[in-house]
Image (cartoon, rainbow, N blue to C red; front, side, top):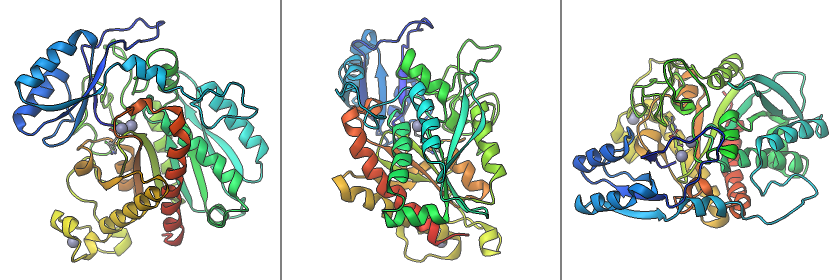
Length: 435
Ligand code: 9B3
Ligand code: ZN
Ligand code: ZN
Ligand code: ZN
């Protein structure tokens, strides 16, 4: 996402569906530290950095005063969304009424996704098993779908999760698409067949189920989990700030009311703990970690919690870990061992972006999270990487802000098709470079 800030956010009664009439989304480009200060004052954010872009969410009541302020301070900005409620209504633009089978071209509610998980497993017994890896705060089962040809020995695996952030609906839609494609093309598509013969893909279709449900019933713009704690009336923590990777040191908030609240401690969120426990338990088999978010069209890799570039794992070279200096990252002229891994991440990300672009021309930018999007700690990709999962990537899917989180259903198919190419590109590389 681009940081979506809630300005003058009105408390919404629990049972009532939040509406966004007259609310605007404004994109701001701070050029100086002074600009950053102004934005932080009007929008209470921790993720604003000079020469980045920030999308702020402004209530109808504050729209006038905010535009005046932006004009007065000569802050470069543009209105991305004139009326957020209209966009919320426009996203469901797939008119198909009663599809005979599961509709992958629509956003599906958790009830539908949950039933789909069972029916997929039941109809593909030779290629799929499911496992409950934990329960959400509100008691829903977190089920992973392990797909791959059955084998007597344990196979190397790729872990893929979607829906860490509740409002990023295109993300769970992608995981569903991936599973469908895997089942439909195993046996006919050479690459998919070879991948599933040699490896397993472990898919968590919706990571933050409680939050996802809440975006369907109460507030389409909800991001966090739905955990409650004593001492604060604010609900939830940001699951992608709750992993144990530089936890809460940068780009996260210790205010429970913030959208980027890092939680009471690392892994305080039961959903994060469940995924972290699962990955730790299967660490010897998990060779890649892929996580899908939206929006911005980025392919990110470690680190986000520090500007330090990812170091070469000492266990991989048998030498002490050394830091890779930024000059090497920018020039790529002399790739010495400590930089090799970073170089490999970048090259792989660029190859994957190119594969993605080949279908519809969708432009992706790739790079380490801290420099490419913003510095932020507690993310799942950094955590998995530091644990030893060498290939660790975060996708930020379509678009670049025209619809943002409210990507119309008519874009599900093209978005998923192009993303499949990137995921398959990375998977093929991992498969060829098992470690
Ligand atoms: C953030 C972090 Cl902390 C990370 N390690 N990797 C990616 C991101 C970007 C996503 C986020 O959580 O803000 C985009 Se929605
Ligand atoms: Zn995002
Ligand atoms: Zn996200
Ligand atoms: Zn170097």
